[in-house]
Amino acid sequence: MKEDEGEGGRKLPRRQALLLLAGLPQVLFGLGSVGASWEWAGGGRRGEGRLREEVLPVVAGSITACWHLLNEGEFETVERTVGDYLPLLRRWAYEPSGVQQEAAYLGAQACLLQGLIAYHRLQFQRKKYLCEEAVSLSRLAGEPVLLVKALIDRGRACYWLGQSESTLESFQEACSLAGTVPAPLQGRAFMSLARAYADRGMAGEALKAFELARERFQGWTGIESLPVCVLLDEGAYREPLYGGYIHLRLGEYREQRSHFLEAERQLASIEEMVSVVSVPGRIRLEALNLRAEAAIGRGELEEYVSYTVQGAEGARRLGSGKRRQELVSNWRRALERWPGEKRVRELGELLLWT
Image (cartoon, rainbow, N blue to C red; front, side, top):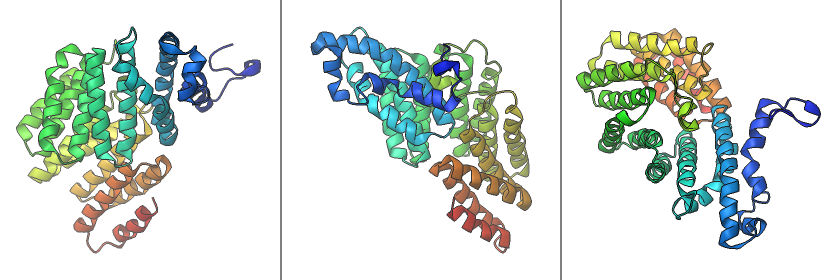
Protein backbone atom coordinates (compact mmCIF):
# COMPACT_ATOMS: atom_id res chain seq x y z
CA MET A 1 0.00 0.00 0.00
CA LYS A 2 1.32 3.43 -0.88
CA GLU A 3 1.90 5.98 1.89
CA ASP A 4 -0.99 8.17 0.76
CA GLU A 5 -3.46 5.31 0.41
CA GLY A 6 -5.90 4.13 3.05
CA GLU A 7 -7.55 0.75 3.61
CA GLY A 8 -8.53 -0.91 0.35
CA GLY A 9 -6.05 1.18 -1.66
CA ARG A 10 -8.20 4.32 -1.53
CA LYS A 11 -6.13 7.47 -1.79
CA LEU A 12 -6.25 9.65 1.33
CA PRO A 13 -7.02 13.34 0.84
CA ARG A 14 -3.85 15.40 1.21
CA ARG A 15 -4.97 17.16 4.39
CA GLN A 16 -5.99 13.86 6.05
CA ALA A 17 -2.65 12.28 5.15
CA LEU A 18 -0.75 15.24 6.59
CA LEU A 19 -2.80 15.20 9.79
CA LEU A 20 -2.15 11.47 10.17
CA LEU A 21 1.60 11.92 9.72
CA ALA A 22 1.70 14.93 12.05
CA GLY A 23 -0.07 13.02 14.83
CA LEU A 24 2.04 9.84 14.80
CA PRO A 25 4.28 10.90 17.74
CA GLN A 26 1.19 11.17 19.95
CA VAL A 27 0.29 7.60 19.00
CA LEU A 28 3.72 6.41 20.16
CA PHE A 29 3.29 8.38 23.38
CA GLY A 30 0.06 6.54 24.14
CA LEU A 31 -2.42 8.99 22.58
CA GLY A 32 -0.53 12.01 23.83
CA SER A 33 0.25 10.76 27.37
CA VAL A 34 3.95 11.61 27.43
CA GLY A 35 4.16 10.89 31.13
CA ALA A 36 3.20 7.27 30.49
CA SER A 37 5.61 6.76 27.63
CA TRP A 38 8.45 5.46 29.81
CA GLU A 39 6.36 2.46 30.86
CA TRP A 40 5.49 1.82 27.21
CA ALA A 41 9.19 1.89 26.37
CA GLY A 42 10.13 -0.60 29.04
CA GLY A 43 11.03 1.78 31.88
CA GLY A 44 14.34 3.14 33.08
CA ARG A 45 17.19 4.75 31.14
CA ARG A 46 17.53 1.81 28.77
CA GLY A 47 13.85 2.03 27.87
CA GLU A 48 14.09 5.78 27.47
CA GLY A 49 17.08 5.35 25.12
CA ARG A 50 15.04 3.02 22.92
CA LEU A 51 12.18 5.49 23.01
CA ARG A 52 14.40 8.28 21.71
CA GLU A 53 15.70 6.16 18.85
CA GLU A 54 12.21 5.10 17.83
CA VAL A 55 10.40 8.41 18.34
CA LEU A 56 12.79 10.92 16.78
CA PRO A 57 12.36 9.69 13.16
CA VAL A 58 8.59 9.84 13.68
CA VAL A 59 8.89 13.38 15.08
CA ALA A 60 10.93 14.36 12.01
CA GLY A 61 8.05 13.20 9.81
CA SER A 62 5.58 15.08 11.99
CA ILE A 63 7.56 18.32 11.69
CA THR A 64 7.63 17.98 7.90
CA ALA A 65 3.86 17.48 7.86
CA CYS A 66 3.37 20.41 10.22
CA TRP A 67 5.25 22.78 7.91
CA HIS A 68 2.95 21.75 5.07
CA LEU A 69 -0.11 22.18 7.31
CA LEU A 70 1.08 25.59 8.49
CA ASN A 71 1.47 26.75 4.88
CA GLU A 72 -2.17 25.76 4.43
CA GLY A 73 -3.28 27.84 7.43
CA GLU A 74 -3.64 25.07 10.04
CA PHE A 75 -2.21 27.20 12.86
CA GLU A 76 -4.11 25.66 15.79
CA THR A 77 -3.45 22.09 14.71
CA VAL A 78 0.27 22.71 14.28
CA GLU A 79 0.60 24.57 17.58
CA ARG A 80 -1.13 21.80 19.50
CA THR A 81 0.77 19.00 17.77
CA VAL A 82 4.25 20.51 18.11
CA GLY A 83 3.51 21.64 21.65
CA ASP A 84 2.99 18.00 22.68
CA TYR A 85 6.54 16.91 21.89
CA LEU A 86 8.61 20.12 22.04
CA PRO A 87 9.24 19.77 25.83
CA LEU A 88 10.62 16.29 25.22
CA LEU A 89 12.88 17.51 22.40
CA ARG A 90 14.20 20.27 24.66
CA ARG A 91 15.04 17.79 27.39
CA TRP A 92 16.75 15.33 25.06
CA ALA A 93 18.69 18.11 23.31
CA TYR A 94 20.42 19.10 26.54
CA GLU A 95 21.15 15.57 27.79
CA PRO A 96 24.23 13.72 26.46
CA SER A 97 23.20 10.74 24.33
CA GLY A 98 23.71 9.21 20.93
CA VAL A 99 20.79 11.20 19.54
CA GLN A 100 21.42 14.51 21.32
CA GLN A 101 22.27 16.41 18.13
CA GLU A 102 19.28 14.97 16.29
CA ALA A 103 16.99 16.05 19.12
CA ALA A 104 18.49 19.56 19.03
CA TYR A 105 18.08 19.66 15.25
CA LEU A 106 14.40 18.77 15.46
CA GLY A 107 13.86 20.96 18.52
CA ALA A 108 15.17 24.01 16.67
CA GLN A 109 12.77 23.39 13.79
CA ALA A 110 9.88 22.92 16.23
CA CYS A 111 10.73 26.26 17.87
CA LEU A 112 10.75 27.99 14.48
CA LEU A 113 7.33 26.50 13.72
CA GLN A 114 5.90 27.75 17.00
CA GLY A 115 7.60 31.10 16.48
CA LEU A 116 5.93 31.60 13.12
CA ILE A 117 2.54 30.90 14.67
CA ALA A 118 3.30 33.40 17.44
CA TYR A 119 4.15 35.98 14.74
CA HIS A 120 0.77 35.55 13.07
CA ARG A 121 -0.88 36.01 16.47
CA LEU A 122 1.08 39.23 17.10
CA GLN A 123 2.95 37.58 20.00
CA PHE A 124 6.29 39.07 19.05
CA GLN A 125 7.98 38.63 22.44
CA ARG A 126 7.10 34.94 22.39
CA LYS A 127 8.41 34.68 18.84
CA LYS A 128 11.71 36.22 19.90
CA TYR A 129 12.02 33.80 22.82
CA LEU A 130 11.36 30.81 20.57
CA CYS A 131 13.80 32.04 17.93
CA GLU A 132 16.50 32.56 20.56
CA GLU A 133 15.93 28.99 21.68
CA ALA A 134 16.15 27.87 18.06
CA VAL A 135 19.51 29.65 17.77
CA SER A 136 20.82 27.81 20.86
CA LEU A 137 19.55 24.44 19.67
CA SER A 138 20.99 25.01 16.19
CA ARG A 139 24.42 25.59 17.73
CA LEU A 140 24.04 22.36 19.74
CA ALA A 141 23.05 20.50 16.58
CA GLY A 142 26.07 21.87 14.71
CA GLU A 143 23.88 22.84 11.76
CA PRO A 144 24.94 26.14 10.13
CA VAL A 145 21.94 26.16 7.76
CA LEU A 146 19.53 25.92 10.66
CA LEU A 147 21.53 28.52 12.62
CA VAL A 148 21.37 31.07 9.79
CA LYS A 149 17.63 30.48 9.44
CA ALA A 150 17.12 30.92 13.20
CA LEU A 151 19.19 34.13 13.26
CA ILE A 152 17.12 35.58 10.41
CA ASP A 153 13.88 34.75 12.19
CA ARG A 154 15.19 36.18 15.46
CA GLY A 155 16.08 39.40 13.64
CA ARG A 156 12.54 39.67 12.32
CA ALA A 157 11.15 39.20 15.83
CA CYS A 158 13.41 41.97 17.13
CA TYR A 159 12.22 44.23 14.31
CA TRP A 160 8.58 43.85 15.30
CA LEU A 161 9.52 44.60 18.91
CA GLY A 162 11.16 47.84 17.80
CA GLN A 163 14.64 46.62 18.76
CA SER A 164 16.52 48.02 15.77
CA GLU A 165 20.05 47.36 17.06
CA SER A 166 19.28 43.73 17.89
CA THR A 167 17.62 43.37 14.49
CA LEU A 168 20.71 44.56 12.71
CA GLU A 169 23.03 42.41 14.84
CA SER A 170 21.05 39.24 14.10
CA PHE A 171 21.06 39.86 10.36
CA GLN A 172 24.75 40.78 10.36
CA GLU A 173 25.63 37.56 12.20
CA ALA A 174 23.56 35.59 9.69
CA CYS A 175 25.45 37.26 6.83
CA SER A 176 28.80 36.52 8.50
CA LEU A 177 27.92 32.80 8.27
CA ALA A 178 26.79 33.04 4.65
CA GLY A 179 29.82 31.16 3.36
CA THR A 180 28.72 28.04 5.25
CA VAL A 181 25.25 27.73 3.68
CA PRO A 182 23.81 27.26 0.16
CA ALA A 183 23.46 30.32 -2.08
CA PRO A 184 19.67 30.79 -1.72
CA LEU A 185 19.92 31.05 2.07
CA GLN A 186 22.84 33.45 1.66
CA GLY A 187 20.51 35.56 -0.45
CA ARG A 188 17.85 35.46 2.26
CA ALA A 189 20.38 36.67 4.86
CA PHE A 190 21.56 39.61 2.75
CA MET A 191 17.98 40.43 1.77
CA SER A 192 17.07 40.64 5.45
CA LEU A 193 20.04 42.91 6.06
CA ALA A 194 18.96 45.11 3.14
CA ARG A 195 15.50 45.33 4.67
CA ALA A 196 16.96 46.43 8.03
CA TYR A 197 18.99 49.15 6.30
CA ALA A 198 15.93 50.30 4.34
CA ASP A 199 13.94 50.60 7.58
CA ARG A 200 16.60 53.04 8.77
CA GLY A 201 16.52 55.03 5.55
CA MET A 202 20.07 53.92 4.68
CA ALA A 203 19.48 53.75 0.94
CA GLY A 204 23.07 53.12 -0.18
CA GLU A 205 23.63 50.27 2.26
CA ALA A 206 20.20 48.80 1.54
CA LEU A 207 20.68 48.74 -2.23
CA LYS A 208 24.19 47.30 -1.91
CA ALA A 209 22.99 44.47 0.34
CA PHE A 210 20.05 43.95 -2.01
CA GLU A 211 22.39 43.46 -4.97
CA LEU A 212 24.49 40.99 -2.98
CA ALA A 213 21.29 39.10 -2.22
CA ARG A 214 20.16 39.05 -5.85
CA GLU A 215 23.48 37.56 -6.92
CA ARG A 216 22.85 34.66 -4.55
CA PHE A 217 19.17 34.19 -5.36
CA GLN A 218 19.88 33.22 -8.96
CA GLY A 219 19.70 29.46 -8.51
CA TRP A 220 17.54 27.13 -6.44
CA THR A 221 19.18 23.86 -7.48
CA GLY A 222 20.85 21.39 -5.15
CA ILE A 223 18.79 22.39 -2.10
CA GLU A 224 16.92 19.12 -1.59
CA SER A 225 18.97 18.27 1.51
CA LEU A 226 18.07 21.52 3.31
CA PRO A 227 15.90 21.32 6.46
CA VAL A 228 12.18 21.39 5.80
CA CYS A 229 11.89 24.71 7.64
CA VAL A 230 14.05 26.25 4.90
CA LEU A 231 12.52 24.41 1.95
CA LEU A 232 8.95 25.30 2.93
CA ASP A 233 9.52 28.79 4.36
CA GLU A 234 11.92 30.09 1.74
CA GLY A 235 11.75 30.13 -2.02
CA ALA A 236 12.23 32.17 -5.17
CA TYR A 237 9.29 34.35 -4.08
CA ARG A 238 11.39 35.83 -1.26
CA GLU A 239 13.42 38.00 -3.66
CA PRO A 240 10.49 40.03 -5.06
CA LEU A 241 8.78 40.06 -1.65
CA TYR A 242 11.77 41.64 0.05
CA GLY A 243 12.62 43.75 -2.98
CA GLY A 244 9.12 45.22 -2.93
CA TYR A 245 9.34 45.91 0.80
CA ILE A 246 12.71 47.64 0.44
CA HIS A 247 11.45 49.95 -2.30
CA LEU A 248 8.39 50.79 -0.18
CA ARG A 249 10.58 51.89 2.71
CA LEU A 250 12.90 53.87 0.45
CA GLY A 251 9.86 55.47 -1.14
CA GLU A 252 8.76 56.67 2.29
CA TYR A 253 12.11 58.23 3.09
CA ARG A 254 12.76 59.74 -0.33
CA GLU A 255 9.14 60.43 -1.28
CA GLN A 256 9.84 59.19 -4.81
CA ARG A 257 7.04 57.68 -6.88
CA SER A 258 9.58 55.55 -8.75
CA HIS A 259 10.19 53.43 -5.64
CA PHE A 260 6.46 52.74 -5.24
CA LEU A 261 6.22 51.79 -8.91
CA GLU A 262 9.15 49.41 -8.57
CA ALA A 263 7.61 47.93 -5.40
CA GLU A 264 4.37 47.19 -7.30
CA ARG A 265 6.27 45.65 -10.21
CA GLN A 266 8.27 43.29 -7.99
CA LEU A 267 5.37 42.31 -5.74
CA ALA A 268 3.07 41.64 -8.71
CA SER A 269 5.58 39.10 -10.02
CA ILE A 270 4.84 36.84 -7.04
CA GLU A 271 1.38 36.06 -8.39
CA GLU A 272 2.98 35.22 -11.73
CA MET A 273 5.14 32.63 -9.94
CA VAL A 274 2.17 30.72 -8.54
CA SER A 275 1.78 28.60 -11.67
CA VAL A 276 5.46 27.60 -11.52
CA VAL A 277 6.39 27.33 -7.83
CA SER A 278 4.45 26.77 -4.62
CA VAL A 279 3.86 30.06 -2.82
CA PRO A 280 2.25 29.77 0.66
CA GLY A 281 -1.04 31.59 1.06
CA ARG A 282 0.34 33.62 3.96
CA ILE A 283 3.11 34.94 1.68
CA ARG A 284 0.69 35.80 -1.12
CA LEU A 285 -1.41 37.77 1.37
CA GLU A 286 1.65 39.60 2.66
CA ALA A 287 2.54 40.59 -0.90
CA LEU A 288 -1.04 41.72 -1.51
CA ASN A 289 -0.99 43.95 1.57
CA LEU A 290 2.34 45.42 0.49
CA ARG A 291 0.85 46.14 -2.95
CA ALA A 292 -1.98 47.99 -1.21
CA GLU A 293 0.62 50.07 0.60
CA ALA A 294 2.38 50.79 -2.69
CA ALA A 295 -0.94 51.87 -4.21
CA ILE A 296 -1.36 54.42 -1.41
CA GLY A 297 2.13 55.74 -2.09
CA ARG A 298 1.29 56.14 -5.79
CA GLY A 299 -2.10 57.67 -5.10
CA GLU A 300 -3.98 54.82 -6.82
CA LEU A 301 -7.27 54.66 -4.89
CA GLU A 302 -8.96 51.99 -7.02
CA GLU A 303 -6.01 49.62 -6.67
CA TYR A 304 -5.83 50.21 -2.92
CA VAL A 305 -9.53 49.40 -2.45
CA SER A 306 -9.29 46.27 -4.61
CA TYR A 307 -6.21 44.92 -2.83
CA THR A 308 -7.71 45.65 0.59
CA VAL A 309 -10.96 43.82 -0.11
CA GLN A 310 -9.00 40.78 -1.33
CA GLY A 311 -6.59 40.99 1.60
CA ALA A 312 -9.39 41.22 4.17
CA GLU A 313 -11.05 38.08 2.86
CA GLY A 314 -7.73 36.25 2.79
CA ALA A 315 -6.80 37.31 6.33
CA ARG A 316 -10.19 36.16 7.59
CA ARG A 317 -9.77 32.72 6.01
CA LEU A 318 -6.21 32.37 7.26
CA GLY A 319 -6.99 33.58 10.76
CA SER A 320 -3.81 35.68 10.87
CA GLY A 321 -3.70 38.61 13.26
CA LYS A 322 -0.51 39.79 11.53
CA ARG A 323 -2.13 40.02 8.10
CA ARG A 324 -5.06 41.88 9.67
CA GLN A 325 -2.66 44.29 11.41
CA GLU A 326 -1.11 45.10 8.04
CA LEU A 327 -4.55 45.86 6.60
CA VAL A 328 -5.40 48.21 9.46
CA SER A 329 -2.03 49.97 9.20
CA ASN A 330 -2.61 50.53 5.48
CA TRP A 331 -6.15 51.79 6.13
CA ARG A 332 -4.82 54.46 8.49
CA ARG A 333 -2.35 55.57 5.83
CA ALA A 334 -5.20 55.67 3.30
CA LEU A 335 -7.29 57.88 5.59
CA GLU A 336 -4.42 60.37 5.66
CA ARG A 337 -3.99 60.18 1.88
CA TRP A 338 -7.72 60.45 1.06
CA PRO A 339 -9.32 62.03 4.18
CA GLY A 340 -12.69 62.73 2.55
CA GLU A 341 -13.05 59.54 0.55
CA LYS A 342 -16.20 57.59 1.49
CA ARG A 343 -14.92 54.26 0.13
CA VAL A 344 -11.86 54.43 2.35
CA ARG A 345 -13.96 55.14 5.45
CA GLU A 346 -16.27 52.24 4.61
CA LEU A 347 -13.32 49.86 4.45
CA GLY A 348 -12.91 50.39 8.17
CA GLU A 349 -16.11 48.44 8.81
CA LEU A 350 -14.91 45.61 6.57
CA LEU A 351 -11.64 45.38 8.49
CA LEU A 352 -13.46 45.45 11.80
CA TRP A 353 -15.05 42.09 10.95
CA THR A 354 -11.94 40.53 9.42
